[in-house]
Length: 363
Image (cartoon, rainbow, N blue to C red; front, top):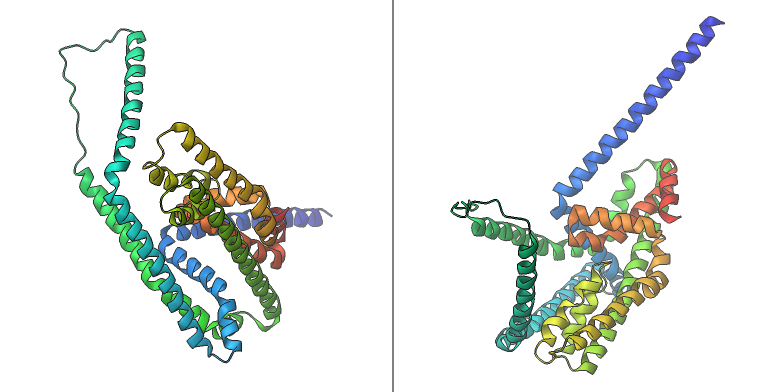
């Protein structure tokens, strides 16, 4: 009897030790994954953006294939047309930026007046604060020695050049990645299935099908919401008489898609462009109020109706995902947070040991 009790106690201790080691190994593995996502952000972001673009363009390539155009040729034509479209938009934005630079003296004066007003207010507040401040113990004859940082301009310049080089590297590889993903879709799908045992392939196939449906639905819904925002912003800016209403509406509408920060980012284009014709605080307040209303309607009506039910994420999980991926990848992380988290939820739903996490993400 004592032997049986001792054996049961030993088994309990072994099981508790095994459970602790399992938890520790999972924490270590999660830390390694997070560190990899942080340090390999340029590569991962480039691949993820290419995947999203390929999912968005795949229905067009499939349609071209149905009308007897070979898939590699259709993918090549579609990638070239997409690059041409972005080139035209970039040229239009550059042309308008040049025009904005030529008209800068007309924009600079209102900014200078506003800056002078704010500076005078701050000086007045600082003067009042210094009057009510307790006696200053500093010696009037004492000199304050300040140590300047070594070459701050050079360090900042090198940091910008490094960021720009990473961006150009990603931009260079993006069209090739999208083309190969579109052209070799079936080969990649077959090769992916071969990575898993035969008894797991049906489960993997179902999971990949659900990922495809979620991503495609999310992209289509987001594109529709973005189109509505751009059209609404364009009509609003045209109605109030801002210069370049279409491009201003395009940039402002796309910025308004960014969760949380979009309400502020969408103000910047009309603020800069409107300085030429609008000189009253009330007019800018009206513009800010309208753009904020666009953001509220988008976040509370359009996105839940056209996007939210497709990704099946609850509000808490979505907010945590935005904070986490924004911390890992910066501004682009705010854009990729929803599709990445939606894919993780689909994977959790198809892995038995991770199904509680999937239920938490969607509850």
